[in-house]
Amino acid sequence: MGNPLKKTMVYLGLADEEEAYEEEQQAPARAQRERERDREREEPAPAPVTPLRRPVAVRQPSVGVVNEILTVHPKQYRDAQLIAESFREGVPVIINLSQMSDADARRLIDFASGLSLGLYGRIERVTSKVFLLSPENINVSGQGGIAHADAESAGFDQ
Image 1 (cartoon, rainbow, N blue to C red):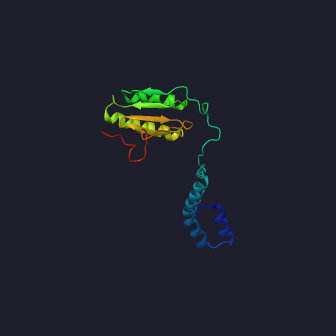
Image 2: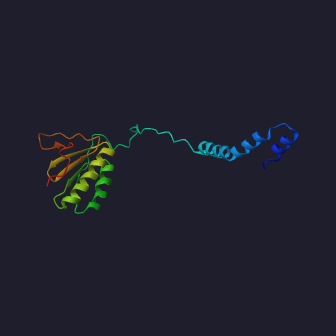
Image 3: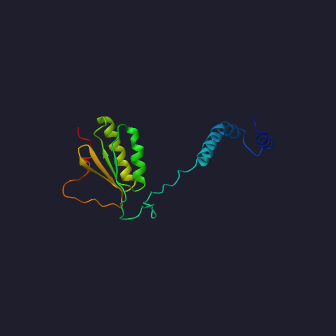
């Protein structure tokens, strides 16, 4: 018995010596449980998740007025930066992949697809190696010249 209070209680006859001994033996386990409960209380609750919604005030170039269309003949994947910067400014971009390797062309089309999705635009296939990125505010029309790029045609044909 290491607790002086318990020793005093047993000496005065206020506590039974056997009960005091059993409580003393259970004290380390009880202390361990209390430490675990304290650790659980200290752990922060997971942060609430707020779903992202389309912003109400998206920076839009002048609606309906197309002053330029950029045509790009990329030779390497790093030419994607020019495409992204122009598309982000609201300029439609025609991408001609005829000068790229097939592997880099696929990477570039994957990038362009993500870019158009992230900025609410569209990507459409013109020919097997030419694609059109059109911003949200640009409507593209025509008779069969441009096919909408869906899941099957979005892959790059060899």
